[in-house]
Each structure stands twice: as C-alpha cells, then as structure tokens.
Length: 227
Ligand SMILES: Nc1ncnc2c1ncn2[C@@H]1O[C@H](COP(=O)(O)OP(=O)(O)O)[C@@H](O)[C@H]1O
Ligand SMILES: [Mg+2]
Image 1 (cartoon, protein in one colour):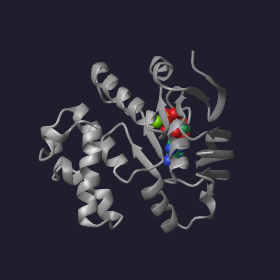
Image 2 (cartoon, rainbow, N blue to C red):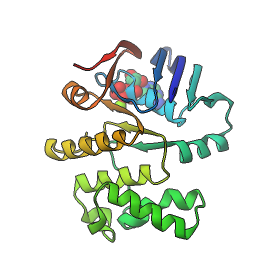
Image 3 (cartoon, rainbow, N blue to C red):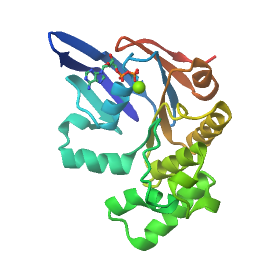
Image 4 (spheres, rainbow, N blue to C red):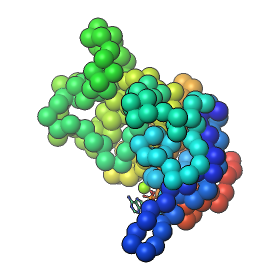
C-alpha cells in the first residue's frame, strides 16, 4: 500500500467540547491510484491530509506511508520522510515572493542537501513537467495564479516523491486555470505517482480521480469508484 490508516482520529479539545475533526478513519490507497477526498467544508479533509503528510500527529490510530509507521518516526525522521517520499501542494501557493520561480523550485533540494549539479538537472526537469521553462527568472508577483500553482507543483515534484498530496489545489483559481492544473495532475498520475487530492467539488473528483472517498463529520461515509 502507498498509504494506510488504521482507525485514525484527531480530536481537538475546545473549552468544554471535543471537536472530532477526524474520527476513526481507516483507508487504503494503492500505489498509482488517484484518490479524491471529497466533503463539505469542516468535514475533516485537511486534517486527514495533514496527518497523512506527517505534518500533524493523530490522537489515536496508526498511519503508514510506503509501509512505514509514521508514529515510529522522530520529528527529524518525519521531516526526511516528507522531503523524500511526499510532495504537497496547498490552495494558497505558499511561494517565497523574493525568490524567482527557479529558486522556489530549487529550495527543497537545498534543504535536502542535494549537490548543485544534480539540483540544476532536477529543477529543469520539474519545471518542464509543468511547462514553465519560459518563466524561470520571474518572481511569484510576476506570475498568474495558474503559473504560481504550477510553480508550487514543480516544487512539490522536485524531490521525486512517490506520493503527491494536494489540498484544494484549484481553490484559488478560475475554472479554466483549475482545469489546466487538474490535467497536469492527471499526467503526473499517469507516470505512476500516487495522488490524494482534497476537494469539495464533486464534478472535479468524478472527472479526474480513479476513486472517491467522501468525508462527513470526520468520518469516511463512502469509499467507492467514480462513475
Ligand atoms: N487546530 C484546530 N483546533 C480546533 N479545531 C480545529 C483545528 N483544525 C481544524 N479544526 C476543526 O476540525 C474540523 C475539520 O476541519 P478541516 O480538516 O479543516 O476541514 P475541511 O478541510 O474538510 O474543511 C472543523 O470543525 C474545524 O473547525
Ligand atoms: Mg480544508
């Protein structure tokens, strides 16, 4: 399995109340699948994605990515795991405004201490994949929203992860630009990469994913194929 969760919960104590953001979720994602995690706002999608990413720790239950138990990893192990195995894109592109497109994409490789020569090759490869070679020296403020998200996608791919997690990646884009991002995700999935994408738009999930998981009140209420 690429991803497996076993009865995972993430609860927040809020004053006297308990928020069950993720509540007893057991899922499996096979290598190469493109899974859409669908649900209304507040249903727990981002919380579950962040748990899978190792950005957050569960209250209870276990999470495995590429058969490694995240609970058995130290914070340093988790950081290394995120850097090598997992790529993440968010709704907000989270690019560094003073850096060029190329420097933004290169950053994860610097953090992973990849040699300069190797960095150049991988940065070019990632930028070609999202078709932004003509914009290498632009800063985020000089790019359209779609180009910024493609830059964020290149940055997520530059370490050649086996799993790509995307949290509402088209949420800040108009529909034509969103469509372009979705088609890129489809192409990336065709190369064998496992994708889990959070969305609240069913048509988008139905068109692009192989499988749809529906969340409601922290629980998976439907786990099925697409039409
Ligand atoms: N840090 C937090 N503290 C308290 N409650 C939180 C926190 N993060 C999320 N929640 C709550 O958990 C629930 C699920 O949130 P979230 O995973 O962001 O939903 P979604 O991504 O589906 O919109 C919501 O009720 C939200 O208010
Ligand atoms: Mg969310």
